[in-house]
Structure formats: C-alpha cells, structure tokens
Image 1 (cartoon, rainbow, N blue to C red):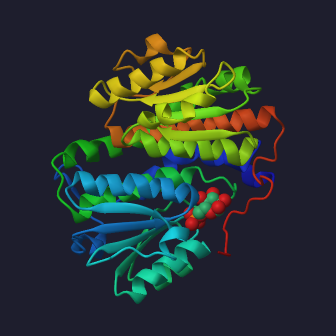
Image 2 (cartoon, rainbow, N blue to C red):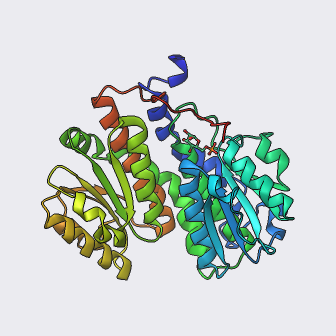
Length: 355
Ligand code: G6P
C-alpha cells in the first residue's frame, strides 16, 4: 500500500495532487476549443427539457453544481438527495434523471434511479466506474475518468464530476458563453496545479486546528463548494463544520459565530454576488470570527479577511474547482495535525451499499 501512495503520506493527499491529470483525462477528446463545441458521443442527442439530479454526499454537491449549469442554460433542473428522492419521487414529466455517483454502487442513488425508471424516465449515470451497477442499469453513462480513488473522502472525483457535468451541460444544451467555459475548462488543470503549488492551506490549518467549529459560505457556483468544504472537514477531522449559502448565514447560523469559529468565504469575481457575500463577510468580522477568503482577488474581500487563499482568475464554474482544492488541503492538513486516520475515517465507508 505504501508504494501506491507514490511518496505521499496518504492516498487523500496523492489524489488531491492527481487532480490536474484527472481533469485532463476527463476533457481529453471531448472539447474542440476552436469550434467552441463539446463532443460527449451519443449523449449529445439527449437535449433534455428538464433535468433531475440524484446523488449523495460529495456527489450531491456536484449535482447541485450540475443543476445550476442547466438552469443557467434555461433548462429547469434540480438536485435531490437520493435518499429523499426514492421515498417521495417528484413529478418527472419528460425530464432526464441523472445519477451522480463516483462508485456507481451507492444504494440510495441506485434506488432513486430505479424509482425514476419505474416511472418511465430516461436515466443517465455520471460515474467513475466502468461497468458499475449505475452504469449498467441506466440508459446512458458519462464517465468522469478520474482513475481509481482509494481515500474514503472524495477529492479528485469531485473535481472530475464538476468538469464532466460542464461537458454534459455544454453538450446537451445551448449556452451563451460556451467558448469562455471551454477555455476555462482547458485552463483548469494548469490552474489547479498553481493552487497546489502555492496554497497557504497548511498555515491556515496550523493556526486554526483548535477551532471549536468551522463555517464555509459561498453564493451561486461557490455555494456547493462551501457545502463540500464543510463535509470534507467533518469527514476527516471529526470536527464540527457547516457550509451555508452565504445569504443564509444571517438567518440563524450567525448565532454560532465567535472568535473561535473561522469562517471560510469563497468570493470570486466582482459582481453583485461577490458584493453581497462581502456583506456577509462583514457580518462575521463584526463578531470577531477569523475570516479566510478564498478569492481570485477581483473584489475587495481581502480587506475584511485575516487570511487569503488565492485562486487564478477564471470562469466562476472553474473557480469552484480551484476554491475546492484549497479547502481540500485545509481539511487534509488539519486532520494530519490532529493525527486522524485520514484515508479511513471512523464510521465511514467509501461506498455505502445499504439504504
Ligand atoms: C459515501 C462516501 C462519500 C461519497 C458518498 C457517495 O458516503 O463516504 O465520500 O460522497 O458515499 O458516493 P458515490 O460513490 O455515490 O459518489
């Protein structure tokens, strides 16, 4: 097993560092930058009029990203927690039902997909594992091509899921800014490498390893990243962490914010969304919480932050992958400092085959 880690202390760290390669594999042969088009084979003919995503855990956060992509393209789309979908299936109409599942074996997700199929829905598995149950049972499969992931906490597969979902949205619908997204995707592996090479995540982890809780906030495409940042932190550090849509903080969670609860704020661009999130950052700063801004430096969020984790300037969709890379590293280093069993956290399994 030691040799499998290629010199890294843990599979998780190795897999975080494999993200540039995983992303290149996901994109290979599927994007034509000159033409501004995407080729995902037969899937391009799906042209859904509506999309319902079902998924669990980290994959659910990718599904939230996916639903946002389709909504932006003018196609009604929603992400459901698979365990809820199976017991109360919403009206499907002629929507495409997409199961996002790294393993392709998660019982909750398989059960949601089966419920959808029983109602006559077309189904698609977005998965990492060729020949998995989800891939076999669905009408179509889109492979994320991340390569095997050993660490229980999903890392590179989340990045590849986001990239694959962008390909799906570009390949099955028409969006105004396809060229910008395609060029952001092309730059993404190199940008992730920059984040890996320069991240100050370890210093942040050292400073806040004794925090009583960690909060993560983001808007739009950075909202699922906030949720994922908190999930990763919980999974491998066993510490309390919550992610919120930035605007929700003031509707309750703000009561928990103190000088012992660092708030990680993901702020990209310098638009209305960024300005509103900065307003939320000021609210936590006024409660003396340490603020860690994950930002491309376009807005003035740095003025209100105690620390900055910098990401290259890019499309907000790609920025989600970059911000998430910093947060993976913060969780990883915090867990390492706390001496946790990083690759096999207590009580958790890589693939959960019971409902
Ligand atoms: C388990 C894993 C999570 C994963 C979830 C969904 O709970 O511990 O890391 O996100 O299952 O897995 P899937 O294979 O369906 O993506």
